[in-house]
Image (tube, rainbow, N blue to C red):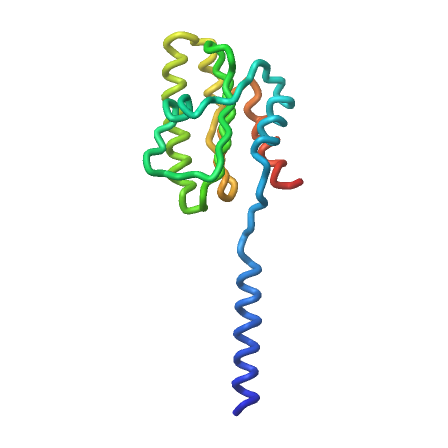
Length: 156
């Protein structure tokens, strides 16, 4: 009887160990470095980090909390270039953050349509991406290249 109980306990322990190892663990990334790599790779000029006030104006997070955020925008207000990388507190918050970022992109596209229509085309290739607890969006002339830099950050 004792051997049977020990065998069952060992089997359960091994099963739990196996199942816990199957969860997809997304690598933590340095979002500042990713931002700098995108600026360099996409040859974005005159970018600057947005202030907390600008972030609160551009994004309506309400009660949604996040761990860390990078928002880099063009110093020239008629240039639409923008890099947004947000690290959510947990993966449970990602969908809400993604929705807020999507709304911001649509709002900003509408704004640029009114006074800098040449910049609106940059939004056509822009999409919000998620990898684990990271939400990413970029607006520039080469959105595909910026997305590759973001994706590669998880492979390094």
